[in-house]
Image (cartoon, rainbow, N blue to C red):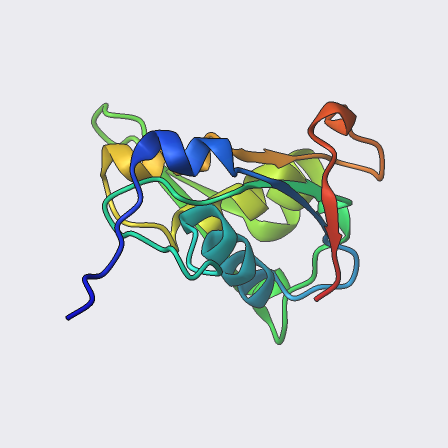
Length: 146
């Protein structure tokens, strides 16, 4: 009987690659789910849920991401400062104008395992850039067309 092969952390690091995603004209949720799949390593046959077997992701043109329907006018990002009456809300339009990288990061983070060290470790391999230039040429990213 064959046993299921489980990857060790050192084996996963040795075969880690970087993928380049272009956000121009892509829908936010569908785009974020593809990114989280690569970060977690679910696109590989050697996926192990408790080991970081995922690859790195570079996202360019973050300001050109799109949302469907009325989300552009109605979507809100909420956070709590920790003080009384400290609930803050930022509309999507304001956040995409000020910090479009944050919009994609929050969408991807919402699709990762919740509050775990593994998810934090996998999110560190996500790099998001405004515009089409990035400084990750040394990683030799593989261009992905969705």
